[in-house]
Image (tube, rainbow, N blue to C red):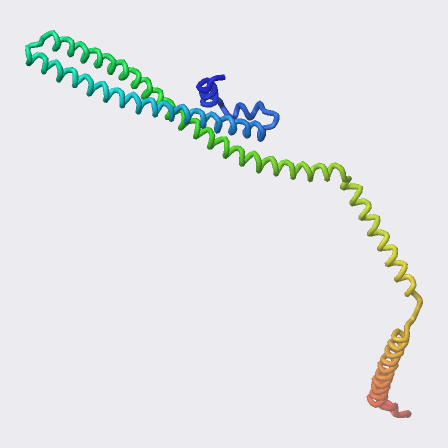
Length: 236
């Protein structure tokens, strides 16, 4: 494939369409970037050669222009000396130089046209290259993210979450049973502190009972004072 054919293919290519068809988009972007960079180097090399050719043609045009002027000057000298034949010969040489200069001007116009076209194409290719590099960075980030997510998905798939939670529940039940056994050992066993606490409770109950007896005794005595004695034999 020639340089300009490949260059045109890249310029006209749709990167999105290429990536949609690619099995490995990241690899495809890398190849596209490599192709673009290589093409840019070749096209710039070709542009540099055209620029050198333009400079050389401009130098030739200047030289031929001076040559034509020189032949015209010689024709004037010959004519001033009465040598019309020499004057005509000099003018013929001048005409030949001017024709050569005109041909070079045509070549120069072709070079200028090609350089102008290459300049626009290089700008387009550079823009596509920048776009491809930006997409390459995005694809790398997306690829790493996708790989991380896939790793998590595979872990979740490989490990049965329901079974893991079921085992967790069974372990928790075993701990409950163990704690229940420990508490069962304490049932019916009274500690010294418990016995002393009961004695204190009994003492408080006895004190409350004594207070209640005193209270009820005082109330009974008051009732006896309040009831007057009955006098026998006295009629209403």
